Length: 172
Image 1 (cartoon, rainbow, N blue to C red):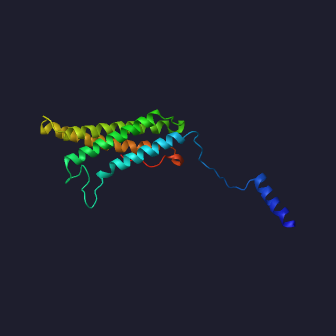
Image 2 (cartoon, rainbow, N blue to C red; image 1 turned 120 degrees about the vertical axis):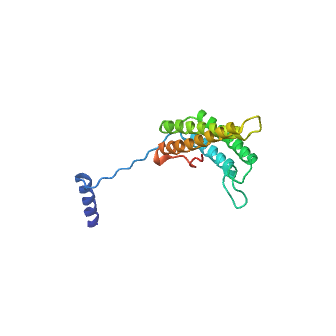
Image 3 (cartoon, rainbow, N blue to C red; image 1 turned 180 degrees about the vertical axis):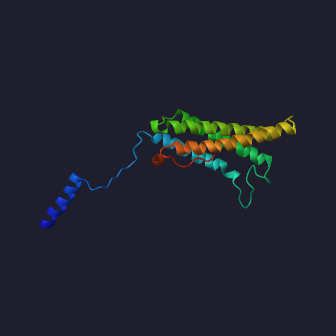
């Protein structure tokens, strides 16, 4: 029984006098983020599935890689464009929590740039009365836009609060 008074006395002294240690926790709660996180998760999961043909496997060089066909690249780009477009619409119309507004705006901008790059690449692959120089120009510009969108998407994702980044991480 006497020991409890000692423990209480020590704890009380530490609380009243301070113990010389400082502890801080930097995390919080983002209210009403459920709809946003669901849109994010559903959309990026679909984009990841649509993007799977880009990845080389033991039986495929990967759509849009050397050794693949123009048709495979075009079809994959088209599918990714449609899927990412739906994600963009979803993230534009869902309620965006204040802590996500900047990151969301940056991500939507990255997605618009990426979609423009895919559109140019598809245009360069289309049949039509285009010169080789026109096709090369569109293809070159598409590569630059896709690279730019990658960098911006990574920056945008880092703009989400570190402790509350949505999952999965974006695939651009």
